[in-house]
Length: 323
Image 1 (tube, rainbow, N blue to C red):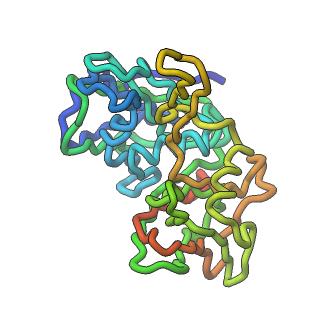
Image 2 (cartoon, rainbow, N blue to C red; image 1 turned 135 degrees about the vertical axis):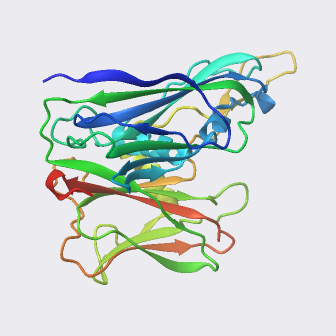
């Protein structure tokens, strides 16, 4: 076995508001790496690093096979999915809060849960069938001279059994209470990545993803009922805490002292929830949907938290089945 790590776009100038497209390699494809490099023009406010702005540079990443999406989500969601599903976290370059600083940040676009897996990756295709599209924000706030490096990892000798499909379902509930999101039927689902705009903060104990349930043909399965706080915190069973904390605060014992406790701020996944089924990635706990009439994620939206939410099902599609 071998892999081929190669460059698809080299320091390509990024123009705000554009949607460039790229033909992807024809060999079996493990993953794509999109790195944005730029000069930071804004100093961070109150010492907070500005990689949060970088996440907003990309409004959508899509991989299309014969016009159908096998990967579709925002840049911010791609970072969350990379961390939660693939254990990939960009280190970022120059994690500083100063202006006029050369920086870079990498977004992962996976075709597999386990990078470099010869059993789980996108199968061999024909030139022009597999397309990458990157939608850039209307304004690239806080940066200048933004460039893109796009690199691909092919597995030329792989004969994959399946590949990972991740697309986004969106909902903005009009009222508090229970809301059902229909999950795709036909392929096994290994996990869900969820985003909810509102989360408990300050004195407001309210979450867009207040509680979660999974129902198959109207019967509760796997997650009979779990609350936002618990399932959010339980993401630690899959990986260590995410990095890129917003900031930290020094507690000063005296005005002249720089010693004392450092209080961390929130992290990039503060609004995200991970619902894994296939915990061991061996199929024993997979959410099977084939032959089912109804597969539903039921979300209990708290009062005061009727804000946008997104659901990303992680489907494992047999290579022989296409998209």
